[in-house]
Image (cartoon, rainbow, N blue to C red; front, side):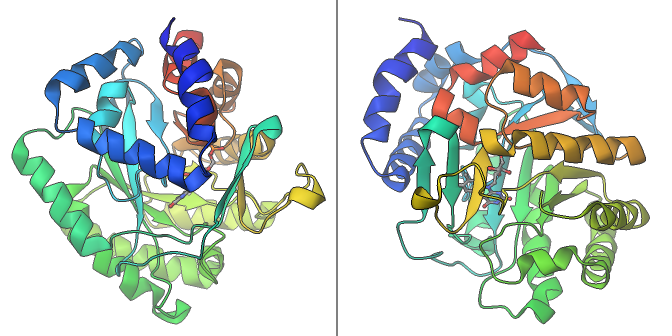
Length: 338
Ligand SMILES: Cc1cc2nc3c(=O)[nH]c(=O)nc-3n(C[C@H](O)[C@H](O)[C@H](O)COP(=O)(O)O)c2cc1C
């Protein structure tokens, strides 16, 4: 049985017999353990797609397919993701203060739609703990040869008017350890977070981070929501250009649940196949109006949806929900179809 069939016939049915969050935690626990076992890491490399290097915002990526934020929020399994063949990994969202997130259940599967809804609410260990973990990994010599991004958000207890200070706290701890930093202003599960995409708030945040980045000079990316109007999107693109943003991640999850049967709907952000077209449209708009590199995220579940993003102008891709449904063979399938 090949790796793809093994996942579809054995691993996925087992994982899907557990609750979505229990399955996720089990996968992360195993990958965390494997991360310190070089002989097992070598076994994972059988999933690795062929190398197809590309350079974007000054970094070299062995292939353009990355792991999207939220899968390994605390950066506990970085060597395993690299062994599985990801061209880059984005950890986080990390907030200044550690926090438990929203009450469970908070992840929901929609297999017919190849979709998920989540309202996790940035459950994470906090910037201090994650910075210490990354420092240990760097010093251990096991830091992988792929770019590692760190995605930052706002702590729930911090009032929205103090958001800049919250991002700055995490930035100061994590920027030097990361290859790139993402400002996440687009998760729907932290009250008020998306208001940071509005003109004045965004200008303030981008200016403060730009100034702080004088010393570290890391590529800073902005991750945006797919629920913005065209006018809002255009305003965000100009703000990014003015404040030295290196690229845009388009997009986060959506609040448009029209593809989900109302009787099964849940509060939260929808990801996976129903998000595909909307996020591709965003990639197209950004790349038609700006030279800013775009990382496409949203509904990449096979080679065709990956190609669609690149044809829309994206330079890099990220997967989350597609990986849950398709497993590690997805990377090779995408890479071979490019
Ligand atoms: C369970 C879950 C948790 C997520 N957590 C985060 C997060 O912490 N930060 C973030 O920027 N995006 C988060 N996302 C959004 C993904 O990174 C991605 O942008 C989105 O799901 C669209 O890609 P997909 O259709 O391939 O899943 C999460 C998505 C899921 C499904």
